[in-house]
Length: 317
Length: 223
Image: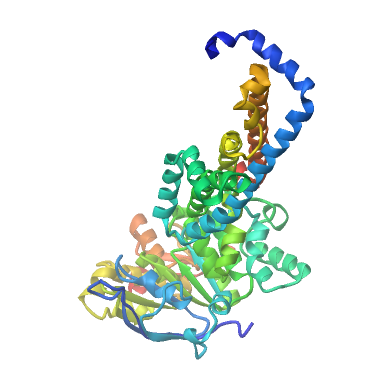
């Protein structure tokens, strides 16, 4: 394995299907720094998935280049390239005739790892993605829930510890409650593993929640804006981006920070005031104030001990 | 005397008497029948299986698979044998060729659809993970489609065993020689040989049915 994370560069990457008036991806240039999550987001027809599949050459480039740690994907043998990239898709695509363990072991087996090493890696990964190593590894995909299947899909993609992960709407087919949990766990995992991730979604909220950077693609596969979530929400590059992120972009920006990011006021712990955990996003904290009709809340730590207070104006500042 | 006049319940009794009396004859003709059928089936497998699997893997050539299949059904085997006599002369190979023509379509069509129908997401995931096209075919598509492939072989086998009977008209041997020669073997012989053909076809269908079940992937069957 080369490194934990790889820098990914799109350099004028273009996909033009013959007989179509417009390219699917049009001269896309952007750099994903090593260890960051780049979310490709945009309306359908924006070429997000096409751009993703250009990287592992499931779709061949028409012109331009894509480089991983400085090496052009065109200079790598197809199989070597793909075995070094984790790939997760919405419909998971687990192999139904193989157990969870065999699914996860696919790439390590292709790479010729020893049985012992494969077994250890499978157990480690099952633990990592929140499945039961003893019980779940012997099950077949059809015996798992949608959420569990996607955990296995993630473990399978991580198996050979690739420096780059491509994820195509991995949580798109999962119900909202489980999706929110998987998103949280994915962020926790990413803090631990620090992969370079390209993540496709059509859901701007998911993009804001997960992305270190967001690339907004518009019809015809053109890049409308590539920036951090905070800057995209604060300064949309044009009318299209502003519309796409929504009229509530100021509220969405509040999801980027938690109460812990504020300078809390010392204060008296008045009994009637709402008590809100420090890890709550500013948006959710605001929702509590609005719902309960207060101007001020008490921020508490994990044990419920008060840390300070914050006013509505503090949240919106 | 018409056949209907001759055919009484007693005919079966006679046929079952014929069997032990002519066990040697029936066994040797059955052996010829099996030899002819297996040769044809073997050649058809070699020709049709790789082609059908690869076309299915490429999701191309649906037209070929379907037209070969309907051609096979439309073409009477007797006509193929008659045509073959002009090319290959009378005997084993002429008959084998006719039976191969019969066996190829179900094998080809089933192999094609078995692979073509495998979950596209599983195949895309496999390709994205860096399996080669051959590895995708052998490790993912074939195991998942094998039951359907075997079902095609089963259809072909039953066709071939039943049709191998007409090989007799072109000197190909087999149980057909008894069936078309009532003058020598009598009605009892004809019926006895027919029963042997039926039993052969039935047992083959049964055996391949068991194989088909055995190769159905575990994880999928449980679902």
